[in-house]
Image 1 (cartoon, rainbow, N blue to C red):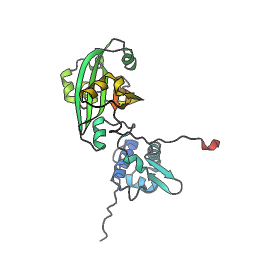
Image 2: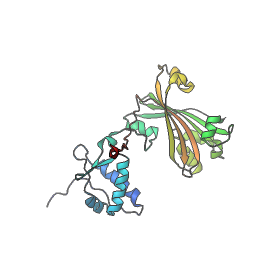
Image 3: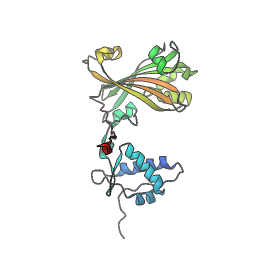
Image 4: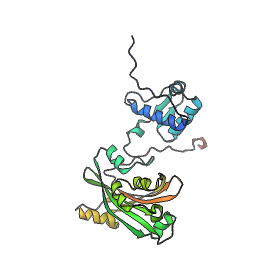
Amino acid sequence: MAEESKEPKPRRIQKTDLKTQVETELLHFIKQMDLSVNNKLPREEELSKMLGVSRITLRSVLDDLSAKGMIFRRHGKGTFINNSFFEMKASFNPVMHFVDMITSSGYTPRVEMIHHDIIKADRDVAVHLEMAEGGLVLICDKIFYADHQICAVTRDYIPFSYLNGVDMAELDNFVESVFYFMYKATGKKLEWDKVELNAVYSKDVELLNGLLERFHLPPKAFLLLKAMNYDEDGTAAVYTWEYVDTSILKYSQIRKRLLHYEDI
């Protein structure tokens, strides 16, 4: 009797939420493959039969994955997996939680809540959270460690009205992420963010400067991500300042170039 092939096979789609399910199963299939040996996907006709979906649905998903830089097509040769995408430890899209990012970068994570309080929102915070200046916000400052090294410092601003009636004592049980605290408290999920990238020097930021001096560390540059986070209703829920030491946590991003070669 012939031996059963040990090549990975994608699972057949069982549910009706086709595009989401197909993408999930394709990514599951890709992660089982040994990309150092073969990074070519089966032909569309074969792959659609293996998944149990139409070629139209499959092609739509492949278009999405191509736009994200996960795969690329070679005319007349087939569809190939972009190995570089799956070698990245941390990317800007989709955004990873810091604990997961630290783990995927090969470190052991630890999180410390260093301060939380109820304060009045200044103009910048109020504008981003779409609230009145002087309104109450919960502020949370945390340190993220990678193998005992400070790799990120974050400051979260949350409208106190968003957390109306929530037991603040619960906050210390969700030190890894205020997002989980908010979901437990309100039942609302934070689904997307809008981020602005900056570079800062620790001596110019009171929070960073104080921490580095406390740990007797030399001043250094940090990547600052100012992120406005929105919940599933599109409500401005958390305004976050994330200071990242990119010598420890290295971001990468696959970007699809939009060039007008036809105009040359």
